[in-house]
Image (tube, rainbow, N blue to C red):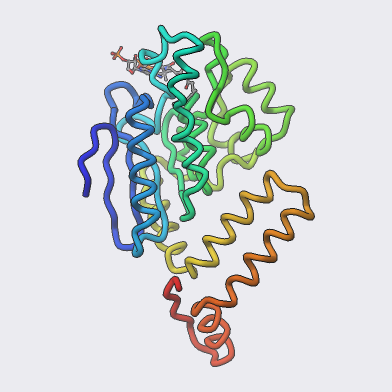
Length: 258
Ligand code: CO8
């Protein structure tokens, strides 16, 4: 696997793992780390045998947000010229399912990263939050948008205005987190889930992801047009033939991802 400075990657069969790896600063996301995350995601997205990507943090927590040291002295024009959010835009084009596994803090940019995952599992000790307001700024990588769409205006305003941290339990209540596990079993349970997901027909999973993400932005009519095209498209796949044939023959289907 490639040499990275700020992350570690590995694959275990069909599951790829990306771990944020700057534990000495609680995995603060500098721009280099975000670029590496995207590089790794795109490689795994193209790798034929990878079926799911797991994202987690090494050390005490998932991550405590964007690297404050890196941006403390910046001016508006520096931010504009950096155009750093193009990396985040590319994240939205990853076609394979991304599962986030959060323990400890997921704050600021790290909460935004977690909100970009397709499924989110967390440890009981997880704390989510947008403390940007306490630094005199606000989220910039989709936080106000994704949190509002997910949890609704009422909670989004409350959490964003105050920087108040959300417990794993509360995150689960508001649909931010799929499931909460004990700290010791989080990675094991996430890997188990990813392996199960890897057994699903990959093209179905791919087009379901695409359609659900489309539905977040689209009108019902537009979303359904999009869904219908993807539905039709799957009928050119070998896996559709195999899946339906296996049902009729009362046996387990063998999916190939074609
Ligand atoms: N940036 C840089 N360094 C950090 C960050 C950070 N976000 N968070 C922690 N660190 C460093 C600390 O400075 C400290 O370093 P050192 O040992 O050299 O002093 C080390 O990590 C350990 O941290 P603490 O000693 O503070 O650990 P505590 O357990 O006492 O506190 C907290 C943990 C509460 C998480 C605390 O570290 C904290 O409040 N961190 C900052 C949280 C924050 O404000 N995050 C939001 C940042 S702004 C943001 O994310 C904007 C996103 C917009 C764009 C996204 C682009 C990527």
